[in-house]
Length: 52
Image (cartoon, rainbow, N blue to C red):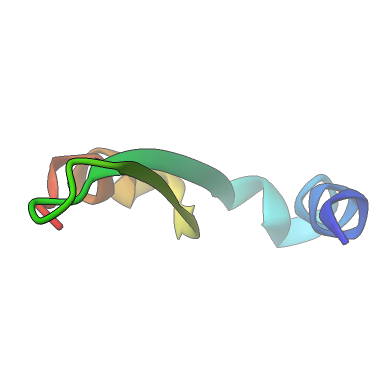
């Protein structure tokens, strides 16, 4: 599935989007998990600043 997403992002309007992966620490257990999202290039910094 990842290959399909990457191939789609390389064509047409897909170049305006990026797949962003962020590491998030759980406040309860202290374990880390990863949050993945496809966001517009203009909103990448906003996504990384969000507290979850």
